[in-house]
Amino acid sequence: MPSGIYTCLSKIADLITANKDFLTELDREIGDSDHGINMARGFSAVMEKLSPDDADIGAVLKKTGMTLLSKVGGASGPLYGTAYMEAGKVTAGKTELTSEDFNLIFEAAIAGIQKRGHAVKGEKTMLDAIIPASEAYAKKISEGSGIIEALEAAVSSAREGIEYTKTIIATKGRASYLGERSIGHQDPGATSATLTLEAILDYFKNK
Image (cartoon, rainbow, N blue to C red; front, side, top):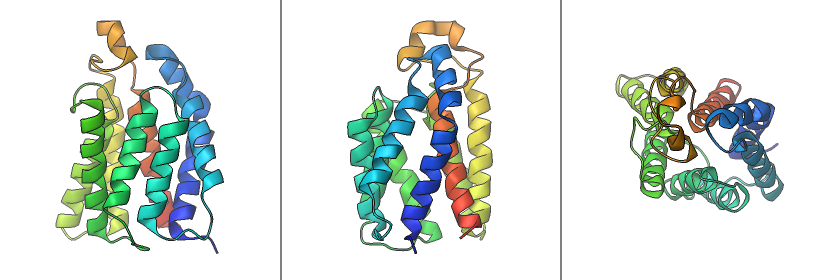
């Protein structure tokens, strides 16, 4: 039977691949027209490198990050690669995740993305989905909710974050060249980040 982390990453890879054309179309409107293609290629490479027997969550996340860093083009490779590698650092040696571990993963991934991309919330990037998701998750856990309910809140907030990106001007990446013309378009990175959270939620619901 495949390890939990392998199964979870399989779900992420499958959902990203299923939405490859959608993500690419979003990127065609405000970017390089390659986000979906690059992300699907990156996760295909990830699944080739992983074994169903891999159980060390930290080691798997580190390998995932390194693979995305080398296989995904544009800004997405360094940003997603860094996010996964930083998440790997705070889960090293673990084979199961607690509710608090997810708080640490969110915090580490966000810090890594911010450092690598020199970005903050409100600039029409993946952070506009991930930061609200992290805050919603932490709030639910602090109130005594379980992982599934907290992840549901995270996904909901991430989806709201996507909607928020439609209302603001891009100030990072290629989309920033469009200025006010970027308003009305949702950010591809925020969308793929939300898909990632949806896949994680699906894993826990079917665990």
